[in-house]
Length: 265
Image 1 (tube, rainbow, N blue to C red):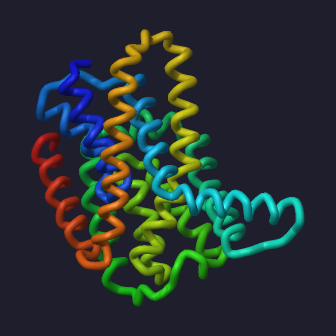
Image 2 (cartoon, rainbow, N blue to C red):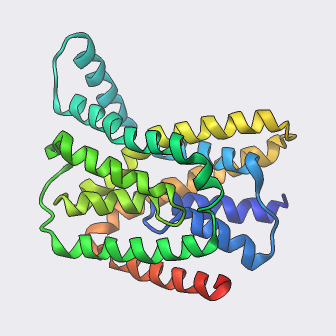
């Protein structure tokens, strides 16, 4: 990969991983427009590491509190709102893991069509807009029941369809349940951590089995750029979301989906 390609795609990945606009759509669209070759497994591993570093650094205090409370809940059977939230992250991750294991081959072959990505970008974008408008968003993430969390988890499993946007679909579910925008976004970001770890592990395993030579300088550059852009994305998204709402992202998704249909239909 050329340095320019690494820089552009790492920043694009970092910015779109946590915004409700579908990183997979962008990582297909940008190379097509610029006529770049496939970025490959090494790049995928690097940007996943970068995204993970960003979200864990941003939520380091929450993660520390949740982990400590979770250990206490396991060893001493004492529960708190932090331990409950930690259990909710675990529970909310299970549907995507189960569906991912069963449908991995279908997702990686039949569903990677640009047309599937285009229609998913449009359809789930419209659903996000509906969720943002029809509910009174008064709840925080600590008010969720296990049923709420499972629903969000099953919605997250839909993100196996390329173009859906993992963050977008989990925020959609949270908004439908009456979470306020900040709470829906925060829980979505916390929920991303186990899946990013799992995805990174599987991709690293595939990378080791493929015996692809690793360019460590390229790897480090991709990690740093994706981590930096992802951290900035989370920071400013949480600052702006109450003011701008979800509609700018809905409109962007509709335009992006239409452009993908124009290119590939």
